[in-house]
Image (cartoon, rainbow, N blue to C red):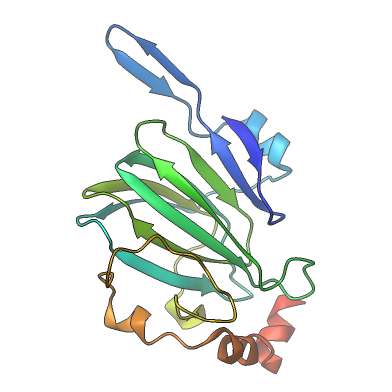
Length: 193
């Protein structure tokens, strides 16, 4: 995997190197050399497989708050997914900014995202399969979200009509309301613990 810089520090695209032969192909998803290049000694606590059945399905924007923010390593095994991150790290020079990558199973490309980035994704094809590694266990009590259509963030989603969206994600608050949650004393203390 070759790191590819993005506009957000801590969000790194990963260009896969496919090793094809007559039997098929091999793609290395992660190794210790990549960890050193990224400057992370992350220990992965969860490795998940995500399947999105229908094109134009939208998830997020979601984040796990301190003291359990998640680093993620995501690769696409099948289909195409548009993946967005928003920097919600207090004090970051890119706080409130977003960037996106398109992942494809044809290439096996992926990304690494440092803790403190909110995530959302939109399926660009049917039957998208992703592998997602996380350095934290899922803790729903620390979960929060931001509405995908927030006008302040101005994310340019390549949606077609109305996307398929869960009721929970449709009810996520604005970025302004999320910032109030982020500035709550208990969250600020946990971030500095």
